Length: 270
Length: 270
Image 1: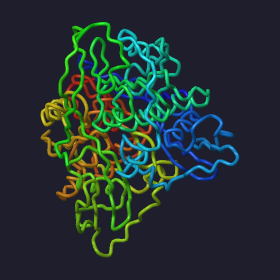
Image 2: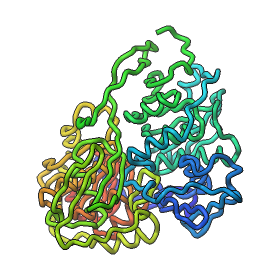
Image 3: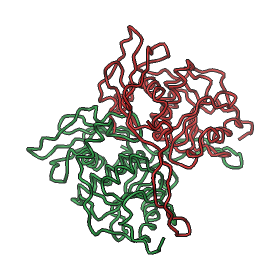
Image 4: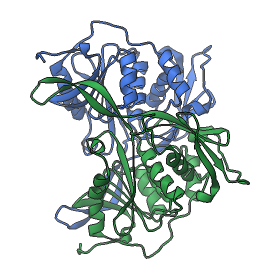
């Protein structure tokens, strides 16, 4: 098993001066993982191997199949690309039909109008608290995320998700070829460490913000969600409804705020 | 229905000089689409509305549920976020269990080791032909793709997929919040226009190359697949096995070739 997440292939590179060179190159590993609860397959995903138990825990949290560490009796790695989750005795998870997880796209585990409505009801909105962060802390996060990533990741083939505490310290950083997987791994680690709800933490993702990412953050109780790139319309509307602060295009010194600006303490008058 | 793919939201922007401004901003629309064959839901996806019949056709081609235009009797838009495909009389599609489409990630419609093996057998490798393209044509493609995209797309929130002919002309360009959807729409358009197999064409995608993208290209018979960003390990291995030329990090004047370089006519000696 390639747990490092990096594979090497021989390639031909055309350099800027037009010269060709033949060399080995690092690539992000992509392999399937089957997630089972009891004996039932609830999902399969193409992911970068490593931290599979976190991926499973985070996915099941996002799907409202479990809520905290106590709901899990055991997580075990089955065969090479399979992970088995046993729930606590007496738990009767509401395993939806597999169709619920059906998707062909990059942005979805929860699809269809009915499902979106269902998920909005399932996770309560983030409670109003005194949790605030300073502007300067927000602006420091992209650099902090990059510092936690490997050299390989910085060069481009992988997504990152970081959970930061109120002092701006990176508590959990995970990477994956799929951006939803990176988030699942990060919130899954938090769940396994009994840190959920992450109600005084910030999620930063290296890519875009889809509906799904915002909803995963909501499942983990994250009040502030930030991204280096663009959000979708549905990501913005769920954040507004769920009392989440949504920030995108976070490219210091610039950024956009789409919802609930009150959690960002702006030292500078507009 | 927001067919334009662009929605507008009021946001707060922090400019580079630290000033805040309040303004409406364009966002990529993300909404669910349910794809039905007969009365059976085969997939749902989060997509950018528009070209939904192409998305459905391209998806079903990728899934080997249909092979050419003649397999489709009718494609009709059901309710707002539903599309119905009726197959030609007598066609008994091999509709796999919904689980086959199950995924939680950005990169997959076909998951699990068994499924990957199945798909590799299902689509024959690209036949060896005399199809070649010049280096200069290859280097011109990213600019040509950008020219076909709207101003909004160039600024970041959306993926593009372009099908180019042997003279470098863009024949089909489609955009979507999900990169697999953009490819499905492009090859779906080709299928509806009876252009499949696209055995003398090139696919260029604006983002990364996952296994799934390469496999969709294979389903459409595309011999050359190029991307502006990184490929995964599995993308490279399927391209090698399927006699597809795979190019990534196509950022003129540089690029990497991962497989079957013989289709690129290099005017310059290495």
